[in-house]
Length: 545
Image 1 (tube, rainbow, N blue to C red):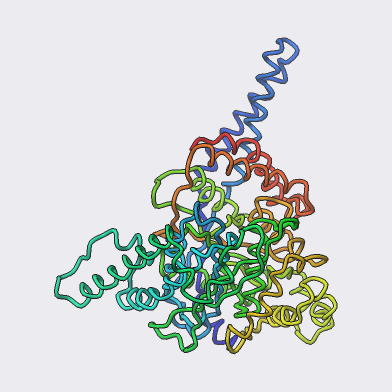
Image 2 (image 1 turned 180 degrees about the horizontal axis):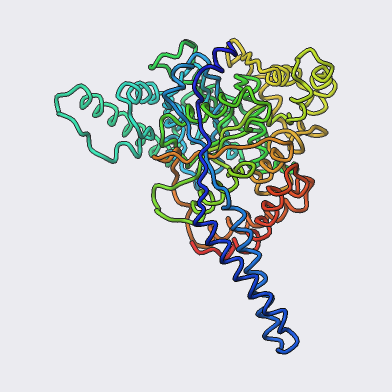
C-alpha cells in the first residue's frame, strides 16, 4: 500500500511567493534606515535632546520594519489538489469537528445552527465525520435549537450534495433567489427546503421568548433551571449515524456537550472547553484529525475538509509533517479589517519559516500532536514494538498525563498508535464521557500543560501553537478562493476594545510562560514570534475598528 501511494502524484504543493524586486526594495529601505541611524549617531554630540529623542524613535521604527521584512521575506502557502485525492478516497481518515459557544445572547442559537449545518453538509463521507458542540452557557435554548437543526439536517444535507450547493449555511444560501425554471425539480426542492428552513428559524425565535418546549419531555430536564456557572456535566447524543456507509443522504454524528462548572473552580475559558471536547470525542469517535470552528464562522467551501486532508495525507509518511492546517478568518459583512490583514499577511509569512500560528478558528489539528507527541518521539519510535514505544504508552505515564479514566487511557493508546476504534454506539460512551468532564478531572494531570490546548494565557490559540512548534512540528497555511470559512464581523465600540485588550494581554502573558517562543527549536521563527508578540501586545489595543 505504501509503494502504491508513493507512486501517485502529490496531493499538495508548497507555493513560494518570493519576489526579488520586493526584496530589493525592502533591502534599499533598510539600508537607508541604517544610514539615517548612523548619521544620527555620528552627530549625536553636536545636537540637543530633540536629536536623541528622534534617534530613539527612528530606532524603534527600524526595528519594526526589520521585523516586518523578516516576516514577509519568504511568504508561502500550500495548494491542495482535490482531483488527485479522488484516487485515494478509500484512504480518507475520520475527522471530529468542534464548535464552541458560551452565551446564547451574544451568540444567538440560530447563528450556531447555521455553523453546524454548514459542517454537517461538507463534501466528505458522513460516516467519517462527527460534529461536537460545546455549550459553556449550558443553555436549554441552544440545545433545543440544535435538536431542531438535526431534523432539518436530514433535508439540508441531501439537498446540498444532490445539487452540489456551494454555500452550505442556509441563512447565506437563501439570500439569493432560485436561478432555475419554476417547474424544474431543483426549483421544487429549493422551495421546499427554504420553507423547512423558515420553519426552523420560526421555531427558534418562538422558543427564545417562550419556554413551553422545556416541558416537551425528560430530554430537557438536565438543562432546565441550570446556571451557566454551576451545573453538572451534560453529554447528549443528538443524532447518531447508524448506517455508517457514507451515503450522500446520511448525516454525520451530532453530539451536544457542556462541561461541569462550579463557582470555586478554575475553568480556563475556551481552552478548558476545547480540552473537554478532545476527551469526549476521543471516547466516542477518536478521529485522528480535529477541526476547530467558532460558532459564528460557517464553512463557506464545501470541500474544506478534503483540502486539509490533502496536506495531512501527503505528509503522513514524513515524520516531520505538519501538525495543523490553518485557514484564514474572513468576514462576509466587511471587506477590510486588521484581523484579516494580520492572518493573510503574517500567516503566509510564517508559513515560509516554520508555519503559521494557530488563529483560534478554522484550523485542523492532529490528535496525536495535541496529546503531546513530539517529532523526537517519532524519530525514536519508528517501530511500535520498540522500547521507546512501550515507554511512551506505559499505563502509569498515561494515567499521570491524561487522568484516571481507563476508557480515556485506552483511547489515547489507540490514537498514538494511529488506531481509530470508536464505540459500537455513541450512547455506550456517554457515561465515561461525563466522567472526564468533572471539574477535578484535570487536577495533577498534564491537560493544559503539555497535553491539549495550553492554559496560563487568554490567547490559548497562539500559546498552543507555539508549544506545538517548540516540539519540532510545522504547520501549513491554505488560503483558497472562495474563502474556506466566513464569519460575522465582531462588533465595534467598547466590546471590541475589550476583546483587543484581551488579545494583547494574552500575547504578553505568553512571554512569561514556559512556552516562551525563545525556547523553541528554531531560533529564527521563535525570535520573530517573540518580537511580534511584544509589538502586537503593545499596539493592538489602539488599532481602529
